[in-house]
Image 1: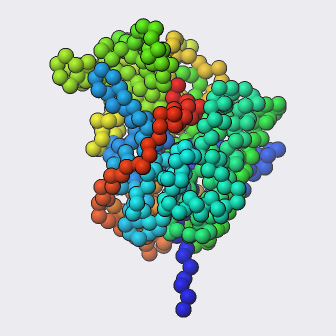
Image 2: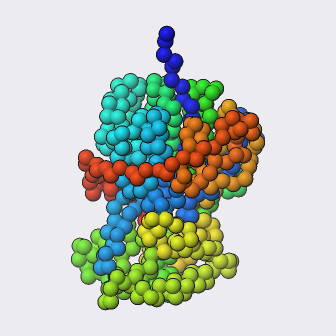
Image 3: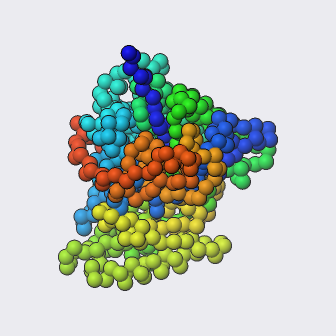
Length: 539
């Protein structure tokens, strides 16, 4: 009697920043272009899809963590790329990693239930838990740290020796290449920067193909992030409303290299879905969508105008010069009551004095102070159009409930064009951009196809916390009682759902506390900051 070969039950393909604005045109027969993603078109036609509403601040780390945990940032504790600590006289920062996720992930839940997993290129998956049943190759990490953070340890050697042309430098971020692009985004360099992501995405596909083929995990998950990176720098050539009717020269080159990327991506998806087999349910999700940002709001300059913050005065010392050139607001902390730490946060922190005499406002004045600040923010109007700039101001207790609510920004801003703010000390406070750029939109994608999935087309919008319970249900696992999301019945055939009813399970378990063998040094953290600058999350 021979053993039954393992089969992958659920395939999850993450597409960072993917939006229907682009996906729909790539799956349409456009004049002169044809159908760029024919396989994705066929999946859409026989499956179900919905808009996926992201976290209140639609940003990569908190959003992917919500996909991985089924919980909002107030519970899982990740709000930004940067984790900061305000100590009264100074603000200290470091980068978030997997140890900051304070909720159990789907990778851990599956492992406890003896369901094997593979998670490739997801942010904040390093360091991996030692008891994980399956494979982790983390994303958002320098190449030199891939080996020690790949799980299990021998997987990196298998990949290195058995995948032809494997190059960890190409698999991870090539910081030198991206720094060059940041320094010189000429027409030629922009096209090169987009083209650089083609072989990198192929590397991740080859790793996914290798693991799917050789290990056949029960739950196979891979994230392609070129969608996000390309849209940040090449949105004018992806949004048909911004593209010239007959693109020529640089416009034509940029459009063609963007189409090449999505054509390649379609091929990778087809091969992975085919390899997984006809019995596999396939899901797609993005952490947020994309749209065009047309102006910049220099939020700290505005807060200075209103008397909420004071810029630090330079004494000409080397330390002062370094602070002025740093990636964070250079402020006089003794005179600052409200400020924005990073463009990616799109949020304002209110400084509350812990004891009399400390910097910040009195605790008893918090509500009154915050109400006045909200009124000032909502008074912002575009100088040319007169339209409101801030369309909503989100209070943390309402939008980030949970054990880590107090680590969220006191106020999170929603701008009329969904853009990220600037924290630079520049005037005017509001300025039109010379050209529209790509920025995050709160609505991403959520799609499914395969056995048991209905051909329902577009259904009602889902919440980002719905992804985790849906994936666990597809694997035949109960949905933990403390998950915030739910399994969308509209994604499944009624007959299949009747045969596979959603089961509620026990609460999740507290995550393990882990330590990295070797932290990223200051130089490596600086490289990641430069990457975030490149994408517009930092300045």
